Image (cartoon, rainbow, N blue to C red):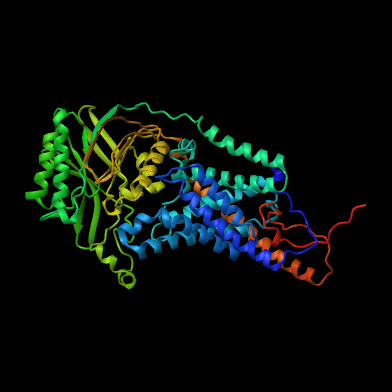
Length: 566
């Protein structure tokens, strides 16, 4: 490994200005190609090896020792990745919001790119293992930055979510999404090192890195993933009622959506006995008419469906309050009505509420589509469901829609006793884009991360039943009415990822900050030395103290006189 970042061969001449400039702009092409390659690793293509290749191209594009240029490289990579990856935002909100979201996310990638170029200047990063690990922790820290800022963060596009069809998925059981992302980033760095070593004829070093890259997925598949029930099973049915086209509805569209889910529930009984299911699940926004506030219409419809099934219905609705609304999952028991409600904690900025509404309206009138701002809930995403067949209450984790992307929301629910994951969502606004399958990938990763069976239920699809090992057991299509039925294992054990909690991310952030500070110190100590050398005759000097590496552009290195040999 130590040979992977050996010093660049020294030359006596400086590259011609035109050639150097060409190399400089070539890095932007590499960055753009890396972003496109990384996006191909995500659903629907799901070519999972492309994520490491995309990261490798970014590493090669960042070989210049210039933080400002690294910032431009990061933006180009980010736009090439996020613009197509978040295309569904254009379908839901329009061109300007889509571009704004892609630019913000790309800018945050720039932070990581600049931090990496600065950090690698530290002298203690001359060895490849430390160099590769530093790049990895900076990547994980940058993903954490995007997951928390601005407006509470937006975790979409984390490398971990690209690996649900690949052999690295079991790593989520061990260390959650951060470990999966770290492994992909580490592999990407090594792929870049292989390429650079081969160009320099260092085949042994290239082979060593290639073997390590190949070993990582093999080792990941040896992680045991249990799928056995630990506290019984839950007989569950889920209804994807579908949403009618706006032009096809005569009258109240919200009532039409509610009626669809009632009809889907009644259809379950055509080949099942009353009381066969322990709970029936409807998606987010299954009824935009709050049945607690509309007893004559919505409440009667929900009660009819619940009574016919002989089981409680867990349904998505809104609760209106004077200063806004709460996005909720409401538990409705037959004969009793509403008995419990969970309010979404991570409401979506610009989707469910508009920050600085007056200012944002200057750029897009689309903000007025969100008429009433959603308010965040304060309680964990856990809904207790009484199951007479088991003689006890079963705790269900119910992260609503985008909440499944946030590590802490699901982990807190599992630590609070959730035995199964239910992910209700409403994908009607995103059309035929990949948003729903991107979200399903997150649900699959959470199933493995927490060792829980999961169900993703959408108004229009894609809905699915997922095993504790991340396998998709049943799946629906888009924009169709359908139902899912399963007897799912209830599990109570905590995975290593659950026990570690935020420790992997916190450690990565701390190490990234330490590396950045070391790079800043190294930068300041190099400046006086450079100034002194300008006033001295050219002599042989050491390469750059940061990476002195094959992963740096030779046109950015100090020049040296050619050594004479006897």
